[in-house]
Image (cartoon, rainbow, N blue to C red; front, side):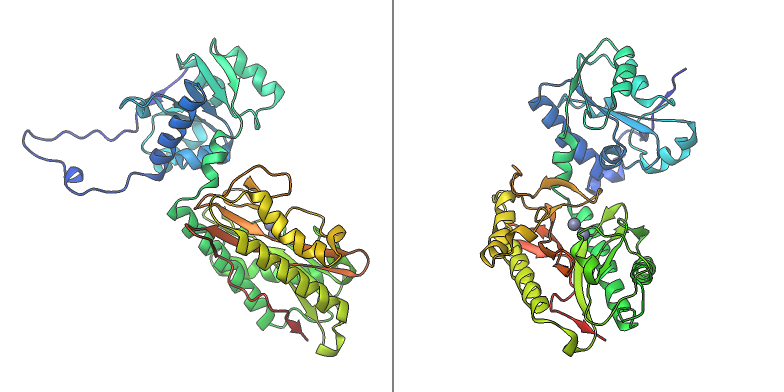
Length: 393
Ligand code: ZN
Ligand code: ZN
């Protein structure tokens, strides 16, 4: 049994009375603008509609944050085509859908994707093939006579370029992480005897105290030899004088993820070894070269090369073992890809990380990572913490 409920506000006005909303222009909801952009992409791809089943993509296009949902967007550019966009979710979320997505008709059904397909007459329907399992595809195919076509990445490509509200959310997420690090340093938590886990917990609690709903991902704190492991999990290892300590962490604000890494040195100045200063300065220079290369029209692979060339020229190329960065937004790693084999090109409004590192197995490593937004002529860092080598006793 399907129930399509129109959530469209119905207004009736006495003849000659003008609706207040026609007198005062107000910005259209972000979802409507994004769906319009998606419709243009669908027409270009030769699709009549797109079935969106990835929950992050549903959130981006419709504002709905429940755990079971799908969205059907029709491709046409006529005035009635937006009206044919339907959100589906199950009975647990009827109230939430009304609050979060009041501008779309709602189909209440547990099997959201098949229900939406069963209700459309579109002939060529794309689906989020990067997110649909083989079993789920069988179920979708059985639900429709439409020609189901793989359409990976259509929404992800739109998501790569952020609007002002998204950049504001990322700015707040970056600020929460910056404030957390400042607090952790001021509290003396980065000192010999404290464990990696202590530091991770301290950073995460402070991010929440500064407005985050939680950490953006599992916080990495890696000390001493562990700092040579790019994605080390915090352990009960105590920090010791002379340790490099790499902290890679971020805050989640309104669904948006910040991502930063700072490496500090624990101990008195006398405990700092020359090799540590050397690789710190090298990574700092590589990160600066990567950031300086960011601007619209540049291939992301060139950002990787800009940072990697600095490290390779110093003879440490084999110790920089990961891509220079990644896009970041509603997901911690999203488009554009930024590695040496990436094929993306930067556009204004993309939010990306630049995070070169040098990792000397068994000895230690350094990574410096900022989140930035590409602007019309370059890039603006959203991460504000100092990149100077901090030696903390
Ligand atoms: Zn990171
Ligand atoms: Zn990152």
